[in-house]
Image (tube, rainbow, N blue to C red; front, side):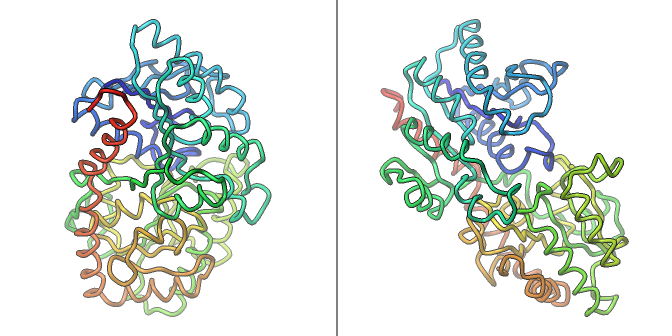
Length: 415
């Protein structure tokens, strides 16, 4: 079985926390690795953003490859510009397949931009197409509070075209399935619900002292943790405000010494910072949290288990999450999660058992749950242990089997 996996706008080998890197990168990389273990050949096609990066990489193991296809200028481009090069991207994949004399049995595309290229490939190769969206434009339009946070009509139209073209759509949760039906009119028979997975061989509870030593902090230090892209929809400002409330109302021996934020690029001159990073850093100064909040920037997957295990709690104050893989990784490491009850997070976390829910935008409610975790060590440990057990049900071995079942249902004679 040969699969053409499309991740057009972001490379699965990129470091977490960049402009276009997040849960989707992890999903594509881990699914490809575990498919390789099952004997499935996968080529992951992504757009080249650097002419000096090798065009083909075997970093995914089991002879599965990442193939960088030039499509437009080879540097970062905003998504509205990327939409102009999807046909160029598809043609580059067609050329690669001809040169390597590979026949693909199925196109598996991630995000709507990949789906636009996937539509052209399925027509050229006469093979089925499986689509995952990861986020939906109409949901972001509903949630966005500023014009910059909302999506253009070009994306909504593109998503509709991809939904029509795909033989099957995989949704991460029942909530996403309902959104596809209610907002876009997708036939429910076309949708299969399969949650993302977590690599429990990589993400598992590490003794806190060992984890803290690995990331360079004192065994006595305590910290809350945020991991993700630095953008308004992630709600990091609410978390910073909540930490300010905690600081005012807690004794120093109770409060954590740090809020560590992983993601984005906090270095450089002010004019080089993203608008959201600059806004968050200014908020920390205004709330006198400069010494409590540490912006670490991007971190690789190899170090994340240590950060998760060293943290008292991982916080996801998002306004919208299609699933929330950071929450799943944190729980696999035995760390409680406090999150907004939005999107996939509402289906992933068990309130009071593996973590806590708080309303989005509500710094007071978040501060209350943070203080509960910081003060009650026994409760924190109980929730963390239950979270680690719960995460085992999302191991990639099981999720990969479910994806393979879908592949086999779409590819004639593959069972």
